[in-house]
Structures are given as structure tokens and as C-alpha cells.
Length: 231
Image (cartoon, rainbow, N blue to C red; front, side, top):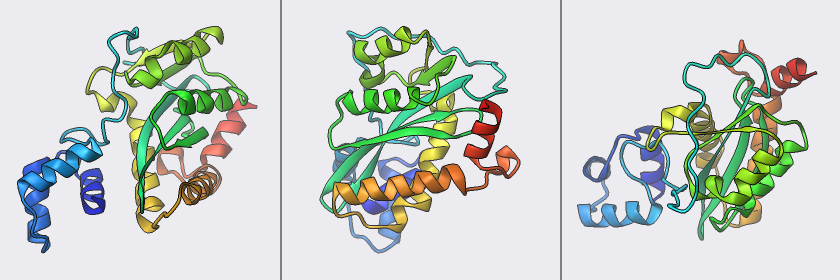
């Protein structure tokens, strides 16, 4: 599962056949049935560059995507959120983050061992203690379409935007964030407990916001750009 996770993050278009062939070429005598079972257990599939963790709910309202053709020119114009998983020795935990699109600054994050919406709402509330965006973008997962989550946005007069089904490029900046988190932190460590993950991810986001240079930002730190423009 660790190898599947790493290879799928690197090559999101790999499905059961390619992952099985790749594992076999690297000395792992596995068959299609086993890899299909493990991919189902991890809830990943080809094309998507992340596990399909945020599943839609038929009972929840879906909002249109508002960012097509929009020029992002300032902090707090657009925030985005998403969920990914992090493996531990004993299983998986889930990570949600809220990020400012313009500066790539991670405003908040939360870790949970369940997929209910509470940890997503907690992350949103923590971010709103810093500021608030004009537009908030997410996928159509039930955590983000739930009445509790969308009511929080509406009460703060924030426009709600949601990706089209299966269109991960609609939220590409946070997809890139997950790749950075995994390659620069998660894959370099072995986490035993949830506490280990909490400490490790907090340490990484502190580095990401305040010490990691971004070429796309003119070799600036996200915090430098976010707070300079914000103030």
C-alpha cells in the first residue's frame, strides 16, 4: 500500500494494470486481484491525482464553479480546501487544509481519524479567525456540501464555489500542496501514532508557510506574500 500510494501520487493516471505491472517489474509478486483490492481499500482510482475521499451526497445542494477565467490578484480573494490521507503504521488518518489561492498560504489544517465533517468545519473556523475570503472553493464532497459547512460560509457572506465532478484541475493549487506534503514530509517519515502525524504536519506547514521558497511566487514565502498584501 505504501508503494501504491507513492507511485499513484507520482503518476495519477496509473490504474490497476499499470500499478500491478510496475510492482511486478520491481520484484513484488502480486496479481491484479490483490492490487484491485488494495486500491479499493485505499479508495483510489486512475485519473484522479488523489484518493476520492470527498464523496458527494444526493441530499446536499451543489454550487457552481465560480473561478473559470477569474484573475486571482490578491490575498483573500479566493480560499480553497481539500482532504487527503496520511498513512501510519496502524492505518490512515485524514488531513484537511484551507489555503489562500493567491499566496498559497495555508491558513489552517486539521487531522482526524474519521471522515465526518467536524474536522473540516474546525479548519474553516480557524481560518476565519485570521480573515475571510470573497470566494471559497471546494470539491463536491459531502463534508463541504453539508448544511453545517455551507451555512458557515453563508453567514460570513462568502460566495461558494465547487469543482465540477471529476475536475481536479479546478482546485489545482491545493492538489499541488498535497504533492508537496507527501514528497517533502510524509514519504520521508514513518508515523506510528496520530500524535506523530499531528506534530509532523504542523512542523511541515510552518516550514511551508514561512521558509519554503516558491518559484511561482517569485521565490517568496507564502506568509511573506499573504501578510504583506493583506496588511
